[in-house]
Image (cartoon, rainbow, N blue to C red; front, side):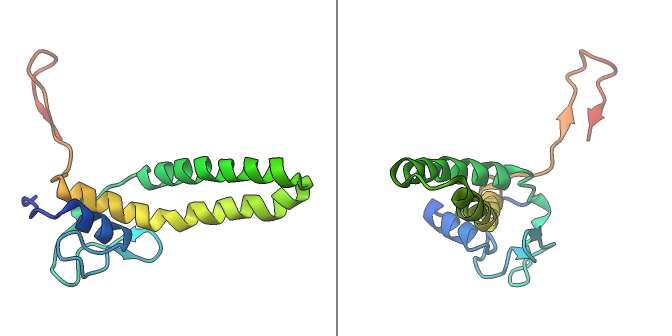
Length: 136
């Protein structure tokens, strides 16, 4: 992988949340809802380095879960609605909020991977176990 050009953290965050190319900030990062493109149509950056895995889901559920439960408890303690109100209103709102933050979080994690020069894992044995072959 080529060495990334320096990008200010504020600009990287903005590019990530807008789901734009980490290098040029113009081309789209995602195709569809969460599928990462093969490369940037504007500058040609290969997105082969991008593998945020379950990071967006973890951070999204943690963020929405924490803030959502605080709002849920505040609403429940002050208004004391019947349980059907939570089933019809609160839980769907939490699910929609989790889905709404997935794309921006995925874009942000991919931009951060690019900023930090992430690449495929390579493992090398130090020769103390087995024959010391390189793992790839």
